[in-house]
Image 1 (cartoon, helix red, strand yellow):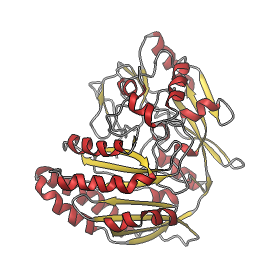
Image 2 (cartoon, helix red, strand yellow; image 1 turned 135 degrees about the vertical axis):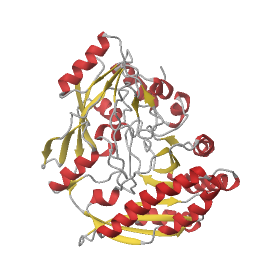
Image 3 (cartoon, rainbow, N blue to C red; image 1 turned 30 degrees about the vertical axis):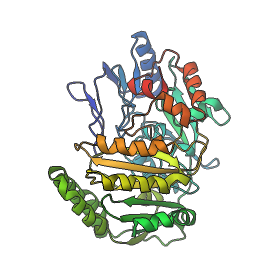
Image 4 (tube, rainbow, N blue to C red; image 1 turned 90 degrees about the vertical axis):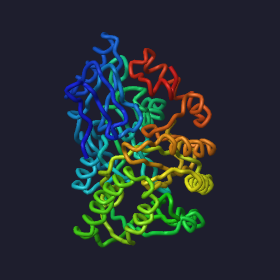
Length: 439
C-alpha cells in the first residue's frame, strides 16, 4: 500500500485521492528538536503547520497551505519498560513496524484496528479503533504523550503530568500540537482464535446483544442489496497456533478480498446495474473458517482496493435501529453500493473527543469504491446516523460542524478551551479544524 508523496508540483494527496493540498514548504525533521525549530520558524514566517502520516484520513485533517511536516525520520521504539509494561515509540512509526517489533519482543497491544499502514500518531490522533467488548481504541491504550506545542516547546503528558492535556491530546486531531512520541500499554503476546462465518442479516440483528456479550471482539460486514453478512469473532486462546495455510491466506485475503474484489468494483463502476448481482456473489464467496494466530495477524488484514469511507459511532443500544434504517434506505433507493457495511463496537472511554467518550458505542462504516460518486449514499447515511446522535470518525468523510459537535460531545468546551490555551494563534489551524472546532 503506497504512502502519500509530495509530487514535483508540490501537491500532496491522501491515500484515497479525495484530498489534495499545496504546502509552501515541506520539512522532514530527523529529531524532535528539529521539528520544534520548524514550528518556531513557521511562526516567524506567519505560516500554519500540519504533520501528515500516511494520508489514510479521508478528511482534510492533515491538509495545509503552510508548512507540511513529514515525520518519516521520527520512527522506531525509544524504550520498552517491562516493569511498567509500556513501550515508547516515535510518532512517525508505522503501526505495522510497531506490531512486528513488539512481537519479536514477545509483546503486543491489547487491541488494534483492521489495517496497520498508518503512523502511530496519525492513527491515534483521529481515533482509529478496532472492535472490542472490553478493550477500546488504540488511543485508549496510550499511557503518555510527547508533543511540540505552538510556541515550539516540548510538552509531556500522562494521567499524572499535565492530565488535562493528556485527557484531550490522545485524540487531538492535530489541533493541540504535533505529537512526537507515544507511550502505549502493552502485554505479553497472546493468541487469538478467529471464527469467521456467514450469517443472515436478520439473525445477526436478532442475536447482536448475545454475540457482543459472548465474544471479546465481534464484528460483521453486511453486503448491501443482500440479506447476508459475514461475521468475525476473535477470542483469546490457549493455542496451539494454527494460522491460515499460506495458499488459503493468499486465495481468501489477496485473491478474493483484494484481486477479485478490485475487478468486481471496476465492473460495478462501469455497469452499476450489475452491482446487486455482484453483491450476491461476493456475500457467498467467503466461506467459514477458523484459525489461531498472534494478535496483529488476526486483527489486521491487507486493504489494497482503494475506497472512500464514512463512519459514525452511535450509542450501542441504537445500533439495531440504525442498521434497519440504513438497509431500508438502500433497498428503496436507486443507489448501487458495491462495498460491504462494516459494524464494530467499543466500550466507553475517558478521552475528551474520542468517538466512544463517555458512552458504549457501535460503529457503522459505509464505503464507496474510489472514483465512484459517493455523495448521495453518504448524505442519506449521515442523516440516519445523526438522528441517533452519531459521532463521525475524525478521519473519515462527514459534513458535521462545531454546532453539532458541541451537542454530541459533553466535554467539547473542555477541548476548545485547552486549544485556546495551547494554540491561541491557531498555528495548527486548517479549513477542516475551522469547521469542526470553530475559528
